[in-house]
Every structure is written in C-alpha cells, then in structure tokens.
Image (cartoon, rainbow over all chains, first blue to last red; front, top):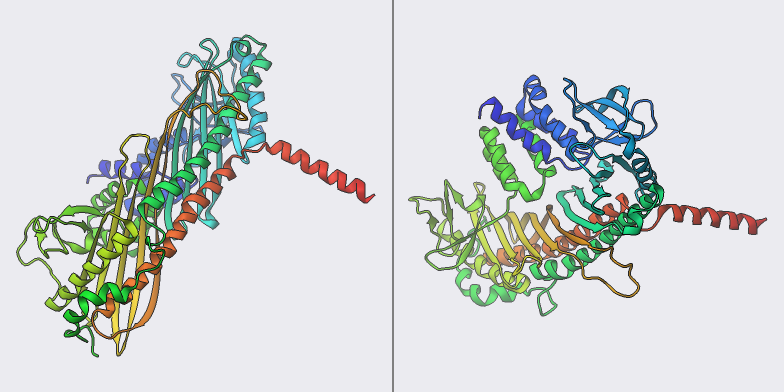
Amino acid sequence: MDQAERIDAVSSFLLQSPPGEINDVLNDVRNIIADDALLQEGILPSLREYNIAQFTTVDVPETNHQSIISEAARIVAEESEERFLDPRSKTTFVFDHLTLEASKPEPYELDTPHEEARVSLEKAALTYLASHFLDGTVSVFAPSELQEAFTLQIVANKYNPTNFWSGRWRSEYLVNLSDKRVKGKILLNVHYYEQGNVQLETTHNISFNIPAAAASAAPATAASKIIALIEDEESRYQVSLNETYREMGERTFKGLRRALPLTRQKIDWDKVTGYKLGAELSSSKGVFGSS
Amino acid sequence: MADLVDSMLDLMRRLPPTRTEENVATLVDLCPDYADDLLGSVDQPLRVLLDKATGKEYLACDYNRDGESYRSPWSNEYDPYIEDGTVPSAKLRKLEIAANEAFDTYRELYFEGGASSVYLWDLEDGGFAGVVLFKKTMTPATAQEPSGSWDSIHVFETAERGRQAHYKLTSTVMLQLITRRGTEPVVSGSEKKNPEGLRTDGEVTLSGSMTRQTEQDWPIQDASSHITNTGKMIEEMEIKMRGLLQEVYFGKTRDIVHDLRSVEDLEKTRRQKELQKELVGFIKR
C-alpha cells in the first residue's frame, strides 16, 4: 500500500467510529500510520465528513447554546474558508474539524420572508427537545437555494466510557410548507463494549402530510402542530422499537439457539460419549499425558 | 511493537461488528507483518464449507487453515487439496472424530440445525488443544421477516495432571439480528390516530460479539473423559453467555436508547415532582 492508500484505509475506519469514540479511533489509527504529519493532512477530509454526517455539536461563540454541524448548516460561498451557520443566534463561524471548536464568529442576515416561520418552528422544537431529550441539540434552517423545505435537525448523545457504552440519536425532517409534506428519518447508534463489542444500528424513514388547517394557520400555530406530529411519530417509533426488541428476543434469538434442549435438561455427557466411544477409546487411555 | 497489535485490537473492539471481515482485511493490508497476530486474535464470522467426500457441512476458521486450504473434520481432507497438510496425530485424530460426533449431537439439541466442527491439535508440552465451533443462520423467506446468525468459537487447552486434567477455555459468541419494518397498520381504539399519508420503513440491526474465559479441573478416566469434560464446560459457558447476550442485546442497548430520548414528557414529570414536593411540604407544616 502506498501512503495515499494507507490514508484512504484509515479514513474508512474514522468514518465508522461509534458515538463519542472518534478520538479513540484516531489514536489507534495514529499508531498504525506512525507519521503524524501525513496523517493530520490526510484525514481532515474524513473528519469533516464524519462531523457533518454525525451532526457534531459545537459551542457557538458568545452564546450559551450549541448548534449542529451538518450539510444544512454549511454556508455555500465562494470564500476560501468554509463557514457554518447557527440560525438561532444568526451567527456564522469557522469550525475546526479536529478540535471541534468554533472561531471567528460573524453576524449573518437571515432570509426575511421565511424567518418568522423558522423562528416559530425553532421555538416549538426547543420546547419539544426539553420535553423528551436528556441532552439534545436542535437546529432549524430556513429554505435555501438548494432546499425548498425547512430543515429541522435533532441530535442527542450520551457517552459513558467508564461503563463502556455510548449512544447517539439523530433525526432530521424536511418540512415543506408548500407541498404540505414532512419527510424525515431517525438514526440510532448504540455501542456497548465491556468485554465485547455490541452495536445497535437503526434507520427509520418517516413521511406524512401536514393537515391543511395547520398549513394555512398562523406561523406559531402551524409550527406547534407540525412539531406535535413529529413528537407523536418519534414516540411511536420508540414504542415500536420495544416491540421489535421483544420480537427479536422471542423469535430470532430463540430460533437461533434454545435455552435448553427440548427435554428441558442439560445434556448427559456420559451418555453422549459413553455409547459410541467407550470401547473404541478405552484402549488409548492415558496417551495424552503422563498418567 | 506490541502496542501496534493493541491498537489494531482496540480498533476492532470499536468498529461495527457487521463490517469485521472487511476491516480485518484492510488491517492486514495496512500491516502485513502483523497479519498472523491479528488473525489469531480477532474472531471472524465462521464460513460454512461443504466436505465433498462426505457431503457434510463444516466450519472454516484460522484453526483448520493451512495456506489457502481448509481441513474438514469429517474426512480429514484439505480443500483445495494439499499434500502434507497439517493433521493431528493418529491418536488425537481418533479423539477428534469422537468429539465431532458428540458435539454434533449437542448442536442438534441446542441449535436444531446449523453446522458444527471440532478441531484438535497436539501441543509441544504433551497436552493438546482444540476448538469447538457452532454456526446457525436464519434466512428470512420474505424481506419483512427477521434474519440472524449465531457463531460460537470455543478454544480450549488441556494438560493432564495424574487423574485430573486442567482446562482453560476461551469462548466467543458472535450474534447478529436484523429486522426490517414497513408502515405499521393503523391501530384503532386507544392509540393516537396516524397522520394523513403516513409512510414509514426501517431496519434494526443488533450485532456483536462477547468473549469470556474460564479455567477448571476435572477428573479423567480415559481419553473420552476429555469430551465429557469440555462438553460440560462448553455447555455451561454457552448457557451463561446466552443469558449475558440476552441482557446486553435486549436490555442494555434498549436502556441506552431510553437514556437518549424519553417517551414520557420530561417537563411534565419535573412539574409533577415539584408539585409533590410542595404538597409534602404543605402537609408537614
């Protein structure tokens, strides 16, 4: 493998990092490549890709809240330096994909025709977040040239390395007020690694119509109705996940291996070996040691 | 450079178990000098091969591999054929044949299907070692049906001490469960009504492996005692690990999901607690 291939290989490892473990994976990869200068230069694109895909959160300068690094937050500009937007504080900043810090904040003018609806959705989403997520972040983006819907993103992380587990909930909804349709997805990742490596990975796509009455209502009313529907669907998904767990436990798990044989008794090993083997093997007594 | 192997093993403990084979192959390409260390320490899903001589299925892993060929426990032949492939001594092969029969019975009783293989090899200090393998796969008839696989790898070493034998057992179980779901039928009655035009689909994958070790002493009468003894130990271990897997797969990971998001309204719970506190304070007064 030449250097470029080596960087490609470890980049794929970085992109597979479980929630909150990118630094651990980075340390392992550092040891494998054993060339910090080459590594640092080479892996920046995949760190950026990881942060954008995983909805990495960042403390927004001069505020007390966090915002989400994502494709929707990326400011498309001809500038040499890439910037990300926190719509809540109307600030853009430069993001360091290695240290996960924001710098050089600048005020950002948001597109006014959508701003009232966006703020309403953001307010309702923040209330929803406080009601159901223990450590969550939400960002709501107005429609752009690339995306005609409002984009609502939620991320919640729990990292517990002392007890060998971590988890991440991501959800994203495209709220299209002209089509009166919401399209979204929920992604869950859980890693449990005490004396093992067990991972839960789920994907769930959702879409539904926005009721005509809600779509034509005042922004605040429309927003709370839409967020209430999202809340219902996320809760319904979580409850259905319990059902999936039950089914996997009762059908798949039991189908793969029984807890006990049909007789409900452990195997009588003397019988299993005795019948066929006793005679055949008694002659070779003691050959496997000094006895 | 022992810590390079440590880093590779740490990596395998973190990356998705669904991609173990692909990631091990990449690591071997990255560090070819450490391929043997890695392949000897990372458990990979067992491959099911067909013994052409007997028509029976057997399992392939690093322990029955010689170069690119794998030895079948049923015919003792390597496939693809090689001359002078490593085989156990005649006496150990006798025990290997018996062990394969015994664990095949075990497989039928617990797995009701699947495949099993036992491979034994002589150790330099006079004892011997072996690996007992089981694999069962559930293939869905339709896309909506759940699928899954169970792979057990039990590696043991034994040394005889007079009428006793000392056993060291390392067991790994790899378990994968996948469920796909489409839009749930509308539940009438107490449930909230579905929004108009609701469409959902998704997939749930639980995958991983767990490893445990034990050391025990058991009495021996003759060579077949080794089958009885390892049989009891492996049965005990699999029962224990099945319980453990159940707890982690269906308990732990679910609890973590509920640590991320609560189905109950947290604000409401908070308000209720405050109200309760006030009431208690009021009554005390």
